[in-house]
Length: 398
Image 1: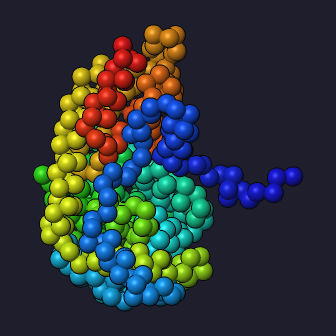
Image 2 (image 1 turned 180 degrees about the vertical axis):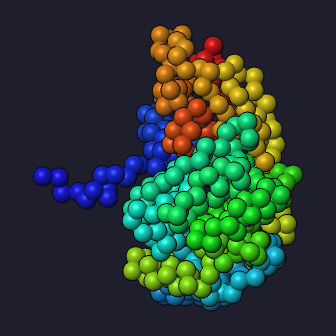
Image 3 (image 1 turned 90 degrees about the horizontal axis):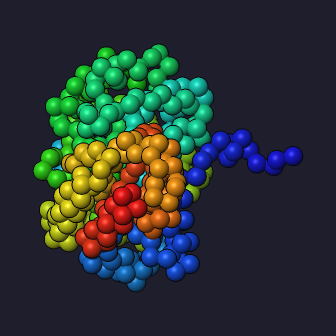
């Protein structure tokens, strides 16, 4: 008799974490693996943030924090939303969590009943589908094509909505594609949502600060649907604070209270020291921190470098994205081809495993993100490693 719950059996391991684990195992065996699978800035947390954390320890911020986060931190999030997004929210509408993933989980469990539909544009971040399973909802996928720069159209959204639709997962800038919706594109999406007042939206904006030549806009900008938008954000990507584990949700007061209730039964408040560090981070605007401005510029240069190199590989179709730190090329032309060692590549998973073994380059298959024609490259590493990775891939595929 299997003692495990059906809930666990139906969940799949995060593909990005699985590939990262595998690449670490190979590195431990002495292989020089270039890991382009992990979604983590390779920059250190800014010095002023680390100093704030050290001071918090010395000042004895070492006791249980309030479940939704310290009042001054939630006030700082409120100020950030006004400063950066021209959005008005009170601190009571904000719940601070142990990473954006927990914030997403809180919202999903607060809103979705068994059998209700959740619309997910593909490609999507790997955990969306699994969180829907946890909530016992039904995922409804909309395919966003490379030809449309991996963005869904208003017509596609309209056609996907039914009376059972409860929620739409919306992610801009996007992981895994780096696509960023313009204000005009968001306005058309908002017009569709206006016609369906029973539909809520999770707007995952964790890559907000990492854009290149295009401004980030939130769906909550449109007042007609603002009360049905739940913003998810955090400090991991934009402030290079992945290991600190702090995210937050912003929503109507009713939903915020529900998230607070769920969080209170699972983890309670997130780490007190992390909260003091995040407070220091959020009080500075994105352009007030030279370290972060430099990080985004370096990402832009890496995007240009990797994009140009990938376009040189036969069988790769490449869209140069406007944000995040990923490129998501279509590699389906390689399917059915035989490699020099006799290996036949039938799909994206097989290509990733082949490149890991033959080129010692770790990538993530597009199937994990809902698009089996593609694979994801993270360019959160040095120029030298990116050039070496593409050199190895070219050799392996020659």
